[in-house]
Length: 238
Ligand code: SAH
Image (cartoon, rainbow, N blue to C red; front, side, top):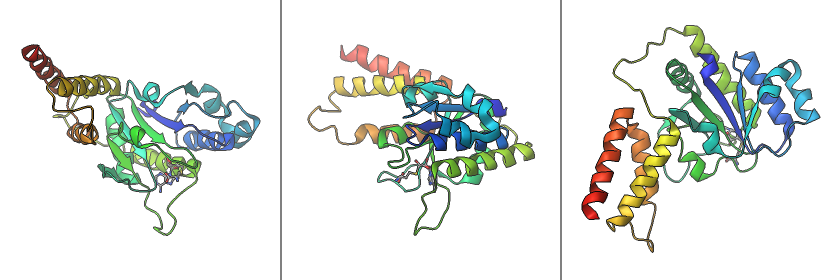
């Protein structure tokens, strides 16, 4: 079950942070580290900071985009120290650990971490079902990225020890993120065809719709139905 949990680091600047994150994973029984376009990897500084976790570091998967890192994941959680302009469903570290462990019994789960300076971009946060903020002193709540990874991994480990987390029977299966991405493309295309979206004034309608569907988390069959509705709308329009 822990093998279904992946930690994704986005555009990491300091290779030392990659090593420290690998160590954080290993101490908490995790092994799946994904690196989205790291600035420097492999790197001696990463190896040094990984200490006894060089195996995790060497097995890390390097990908070019966040989309690639999360394509097969039915649950994606994005981390952020600050709340963003468009509020999103939030988790704290403890409830994140419980949720991740519960859903990892069914399929891959990703927890995504941002750049040292810039965090995650809004278009990246929009691809996540939940945002996780580690509660911290509001005067300065910004942790080093590998420290944030450690706390999240610790909560996952703790939740896994309790492991008596029953999977709700009436839930899922949920589609992987790549299918949600196709759905959003289909939705946008259809809304343009029926002139609900006008190119001159896109506003943030699509973002709000994405938030709605992320919150609702359609199951595989529900998503099929939604795609069917869009296709029917397109057919009748054409
Ligand atoms: N100025 C950036 C700070 C990034 S800190 C910003 O405001 O987002 C680097 C990364 O560490 C963040 O992208 C996030 O993944 C993680 N992080 C730091 N502090 C955090 C906190 N309190 N809660 C959750 N994640 C945090």
